[in-house]
Amino acid sequence: MELIHTDIDELPSIVQKLRKSFHSNLTKPLRYRKEQLGNLYRMIDENEQAFCDALYKDLHKHKYESLLGELAWVKQEALDTTSSLKNWAEPNYVKVNLGYMMNKCHVRKEPVGIVLIIGTWNYPVNLLFMPFIGAIAAGCTVILKPSELSVHTSALISELFPKYLDQDAYRIVSGGAVETTALLKHRFDHIFYTGSGKVGKIIMSAAAEHLTPVTLELGGKSPTIVASDVDISILAKRIIWGTMYNCGQTCIAPDYMICERSVQDAFIKEAPKVLEQFYGLDPQSSTSRYCRIINKSHFDRLQNLLNQTKGRIVHGGNFDKEDLYISPTIVADVPKEDKLMEDEIFGPIFPIVVVENLDEAIEYVNSKDIPLALYPFSKSDKTVKHILDNTRSGGVVINDCLMHFTVKDLPFGGQGPSGIGSYHGKRSFDTFSHERSVMTTPFAMEKLVKARYPPYTEFNMKL
Ligand code: NAD
Image (cartoon, rainbow, N blue to C red; front, top):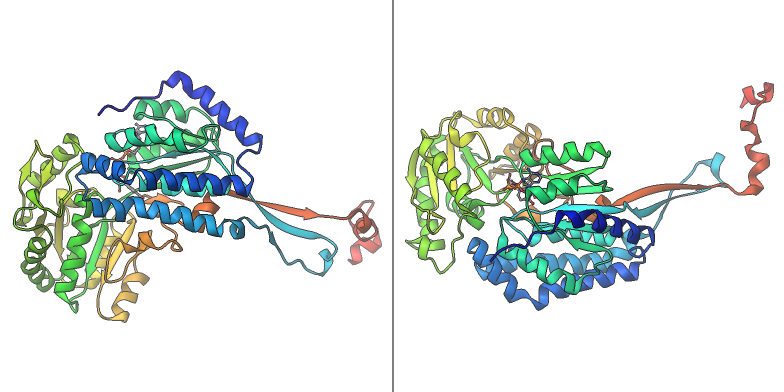
């Protein structure tokens, strides 16, 4: 399957068309927004099998994971947003003090304008359309740029999208860095980017040229801090699931575990049992369809990382480049300065760092960039509070992982190097809305307001 790239000479007219549509108020009526959300829902619903097939070709995703992690969410978010939209879009009247009792003050929720959404490949449906839902709901016009790496899914999106969504308001631009670079020369009213921090910096610098606000959904090394009082078999199930889901290619995957030696020793005994239970003895031929690495360059990156580790590979470590397969791999006794501990792993390799105590673990986590997610495991509320009080992260799940992403009323996003801004549910609507403050002053109030006019007298000074 080849992705047909959008001709970059067409970009100026696409941007201009969407800007014109925005100023014509096409996308502002709530009825229109709900209709388009319904069209997006239908696009996913009526082509569910085609999406599952494309996701399988790109990442070897099991149908259950495609439905659970991609399609069902987008559909549910579209439904929830449609039912809440009227409420979210209502103006907020604010309380004023006595001196303003004749004024009316309210906040209008207005679409920011024309928006650029740049998607990534690990959840190519979810991470493109979840922000899109917020932008439709807010009343924006939108250009979406799917990732060129998830080629089958992006090609399918490019084919289906114009059949369902109004092309006067929403357009797909296909391609990679060249097309994105060309797009970024244009002025947008908001840019929403999901991907690496490296490209995030490029996006933010381009946006700065036009003073365009950005939402950056980035990544980083999300730690699992484990106290010694945990239930090891539950820990192993939850962490192995989160780490190996989508073959570790999840921005909030537990990137590493940091714990005392007794916890590591118990974990490495338990983890192989869990892996066998999940994927059988040979994950490569698993009927649970253990995923594959997206492409050869990410495959090589992961193999190089494992070749350079000074840790002990206690499970896995098998590679098959033709099949882009890397077996679930656990590395114990990983030194703090190890190659595996430099950047986000984004693959099925799980390092364990051993420390003397919890405070050493906290100190280590704090010595690194603020992570996108943090996973403390302990039976003690006091221990969990101590971890939360002494660390920072985009989000937290206590005694589990990943699941905060699925709660629509929890804003999802990072902090600093792991991201700027957040979305999901109402927060997505807010991201693409401008809160316009409006104050009404009746002509009849002239007698009351005259105190502010010069020339200033003794009377003014007494006020
Ligand atoms: P990436 O940053 O390379 O690519 C993402 C998008 O940027 C693609 O659409 C691509 O076409 C575009 N792009 C690539 N190079 C560009 C350039 N030079 N100029 C302009 N645009 C360019 O994606 P990646 O690094 O493969 O993605 C993995 C990263 O994304 C990980 O760090 C992961 O944690 C992060 N991520 C974050 C989230 C989140 O929700 N916070 C979700 C998924 C992935």
